Length: 312
Image (cartoon, rainbow, N blue to C red; front, side, top):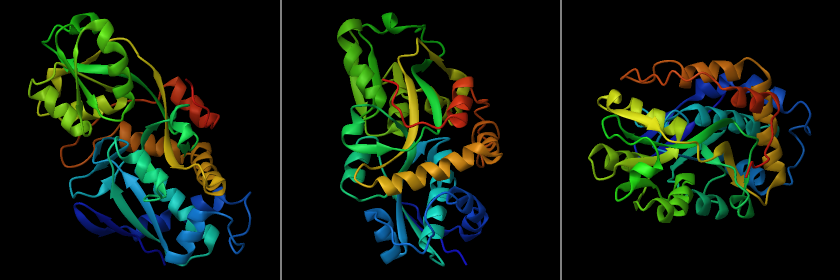
């Protein structure tokens, strides 16, 4: 019997049937690891064994990777991948049930939450970078995207040269944050930093900012949730290629190995195509939001050749 207890800002819910369906995934991921009866030399796995609980971080507005759905529950592509890792931990440890406690995080507080052990795994489109690797560890990449900017369709903005004297927003602590700080002197725009992606988009939508710099997949998701998506377009050059990954403590290589094995197992079979279609190519939620994004050649290559190497 599987037990899945979730505590988030919107309340508590159970998803035991989902974890039950994931049992075979965990078994496949563990086929090359030690028997589940063995004692893990892992702080995270030891804690999960003793408490019967895993703590997962998520975002409230990073659709389709990680977001709060119409019921206020964590959902998305990265959330589903984390649930598979949770099930793999249950199987490895020989637990009858495992509880999942969700913690909403922002781009700004996610790394401290991981470093301080508040979450065991962060389920979001975290960019794997050499700078961040000094503090945390990353799983193999689960998706590839690029950083660009979202503007109003009638703004006339096509490139960073068009941003002089204008307000440019991004989410504090995100990859967009780094690019905005780097480019503001060159292009003469005013930089604004919001607490999360939802607030960043609100500043663009309300006219307080004229451009929003962020991962293009996240921008597509935020645009799709707007009252009138046709009012917004993604423009400008690709500022960087992002290796999106799950994030965890760098002090626990055994836990990372289990997570990586689980993801590699998902990527090697038909499940990843089903997840891609569910979250990137089909209507999501009561509003039937559809990003209509097919996997790029880079995404398919990341699935075919799992790697945790940062590209920068």
